[in-house]
Length: 293
Image 1 (spheres, one colour):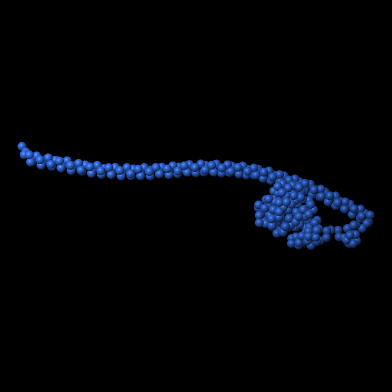
Image 2 (cartoon, one colour):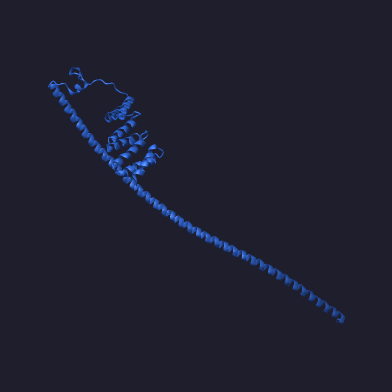
């Protein structure tokens, strides 16, 4: 059996152990509480950051949706505008084709009218020539001096029976002579000269100019239908010549003088579009302002 002193020591030892273990447990509990508090704080901070991220993400989604809506709206508007423009282009193309067809019809009508007039003129020339021959034969039968000889101041015996030989003019001489006649106002002589140049020297470097001046002669005579056809010949036959812009301008003027403002406006607009830097284009712009819509 243990003696009382030994029991007392054992009791004191156990008591001290219990006290010491209690202190250790209390420190552990406090440490755990501190760690738990730190964990809760980190969790709270993380949760706040997460909420901020979610809010930012939500704002981004809303902004993206808004941008998508605006983009879809703009795209729809642009598509509608493109469709409207395409429709306007189709309408304008149709009107242009219709106007081009009507213009060709009018030019063809002018050509037919001009051809009929030329046939009439040829018929008149033939009739005049036949009458002249009859008069000469009558004068010869009656032994009268012919009118041609009176004008020249020559007797009948001095006129040769064949055609008198004439010096053949070169292409430059023909052009210069015809141009001088035009400048003097002798339109018939100028027309004959230019037409002779085109007939004898069709590849002359002055051919396009000669053709243009023929159109100018008809324009000055106010035979605008014929002038339009002659200008059209310049445009089609000599597209690289120096009289294309002038021919387009005078075609527009001729149509205007005929009262056809629609075709006048069309041709002058074509001139401005194809040759915007030419002097004729500037004149056409001023003329269009005068014609009006």
